[in-house]
Length: 110
Image 1 (spheres, rainbow, N blue to C red):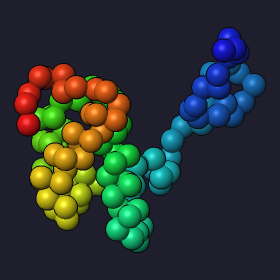
Image 2: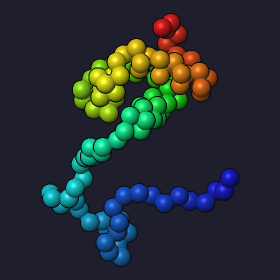
Image 3: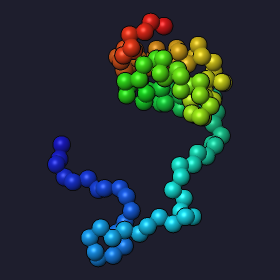
Image 4: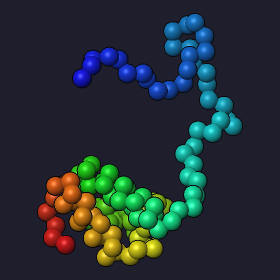
């Protein structure tokens, strides 16, 4: 592992003065925008696996993760729950927990 400095992400300096940055303009696209992409069923399931894997590896409990699937605000997770159903989602969470050897931190039993 190297100890090199990593680049800092952010606005690029616009002048020679230290800390001189361009201010954001009102019409700059700074908002996070989701774009629908057509996918087949296998890709849809893989997307679900990746999302669940991330939360499981990050230490989320089953209850907390299932709550996200139920909220329409979390569109990516919610569409999985709507199309596949809660039992499928619970099985996927269990599969990811076994795969990554990450038990439910809340100690809940399915």
